Each structure stands twice: as C-alpha cells, then as structure tokens.
Length: 96
Length: 298
Image (cartoon, rainbow over all chains, first blue to last red; front, side, top):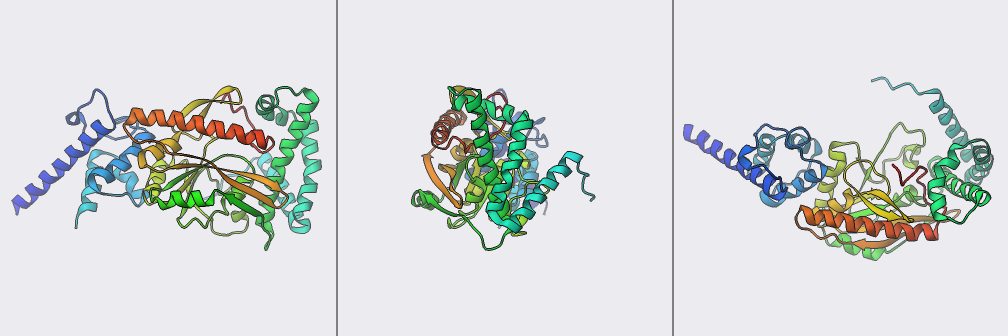
C-alpha cells in the first residue's frame, strides 16, 4: 500500500518538474532555473511575474505537452495559481 | 445585492435614452433620426466637449479644413454615430424590423474556419459594428466576443433591449487575464473570437503610424493568433444606407508561430497591417470611425 502512495508521489513530482521545465524553457524565463521555482509560488504577477501573454502561451503549452485542454474557466483560473495546482489539474484530467 | 445608486448625470442620460426609446417605439427609425437633429444641434452649439473629442481625429483625417469645415465635419460624424445608436435602439425596441446587409468575403471566412484552428475576427469601432456583427451567427461555429460588457449600461445592446439571449458568447475583458485565457481556449476549440483592434483595454500594446502619427494599438489579438496558430481576419462594418450595412473581410493576416521573440515581431507586423487597413477604411468612410477621444495620446 505504501509503495502505491510513494509511486503516486513520484509521478506527481515528475509532473511538477516537467511543468517547471516547460515554464522556464518555453516562456523563456531568464535568470531562473526550474529548481528555483517554488511549488506554491503564484505563477502570475507577484510570484513568477508571468503576464497575460504568458497565460495565453501556457494554455497552449499545457495542451501541447500534457494533452490537457482547459474547458471550464473557473477550473482554469484555479489551475493557474501555482505549479502545485497546475500539476493537480493536469493529473486529474489525465486520470483514466 | 443592492444595485449602486446612479448619479444625477447618469439618471439624466438614462432619461434621454428612455425618451429616444419611446420615440422609436411610436415613430420608428425615421422618428429617431429626426429627434437626433435638435439633440445634436444643441450639443454642437452649446457644448465644447464634442468638438474637443472629435478634433484629434478630424484634424488628421482632414488636415486642410479650416474652422467652419471642421465644425461641419464634427456635425457629420456625430450625426453618423447618432444614427448608428438610433438603429441599435430601433432594432431593440421594435419587433419585426431589421437591417439588410452583405458579408463580403464570407467564403474566405468559412474556409479559414474550416482549417479548424479557430479564427480571430479583428474589428473596430466603425460603422454599425455591433448590429452587423450580431448578424454573423451563421458561421457554423460558435462566436465569442472579447469585450467590455456592462449589463447595467445606459446605452443597451439591442439584444438586451429585446430581452433576447446574446447572439454570441461574451468573454469579459475584465475577467481573468483580460479574458485572454478564455479566448485562447475558444480558439483551441476551433471557434471564432472577435476582438476590437482599435480600443486598448489591457494587455500588450504596439505602436504604429495611423493618419501620420504614432499611436499605441492593442496587440493581444496577434499574440493569441500566433500562439494558437489561428489566422486573423480583419472584418470592418459600414452603414451604407438607412437600413443597410456592409461587412467586409478587408485583410487576412497569418501570424507565424515560434518563440517569444518571434511572436513579438508578429505583433508588430499585425498591428502595422491593421493600422494600414483602418487608414484605408477611414479614407472611404471618414464619418464612420467612432473613437471620440484623443486616440494618439492615451
């Protein structure tokens, strides 16, 4: 049972790392490495400082890399709060 | 939740609109047009604001006109705008009436939609754009309009006056990320998103020459298109008769994808294209561009 949880946590960690990589590489964030992004830091404004153009690109990147489309805007708004919430959103949508 | 109290000027404005609506119901479109003359005449004779608001555009569009010609230009453009507002009220208040129009470039537009990447319909505050755009609901995909929408506005949309469902889906520009996330999602579904290309409501802006001077145009539309691969169709409306309008696809712009730097270049290219098309439009319909403020020094 414990190994199932451990496996789930590992998958979630990998997902978060992938999200951070995509954010840094595809949004061209200079002077920042994926490891420096806090899981709970806000993605926009006072957190990572992303703007509305980044939000547009992030919607496209989430579909491109994770095959997940944002359908409900309330859900999307919650998903875009942090790396943690985005990972949870993608994970929920990818679940069979 | 209690509604906020209106100021005296807002109440007077509402009273003025009510007066027009009653006139439209009783006397129809012509009655509304007739009522415009004394109202606009009063504004022109006793109000300085309207001359100040139209001057930045008119002095660039008609640089050789003197004071009297400028006064006449102001009268023409305000009258033209008044007629568009009367039409909107008339369509809202009176059942069984309508405008006749044509959509030039419908085939091209349908082909763009057929590509399945969504289409950004870039339009402007020209002609009877609200009425005309609400008539393009036979494009085979849902239409979304990224706009500043006030349900409690004094000058209501005709569908609000009729208590009819809105003929397109409204994406509020004061929503999450200026509505751009919602617009992106709509494009990903292959839908149409209409955006005003000549009114800055937030997000990125790019400078381009318009009527001889630089002006900052909103650029979110090109960024949306570049990110999603959607083409941009510049669609402008013109009022061509008392009950006629003309909608025309004036240009099609395909932003290239690529990295952020490339997308910024595409925004510049897109804005220059839009500015050129709008300049051509005001060359043809000088009294049908309705941005009554200093567009060049916002």
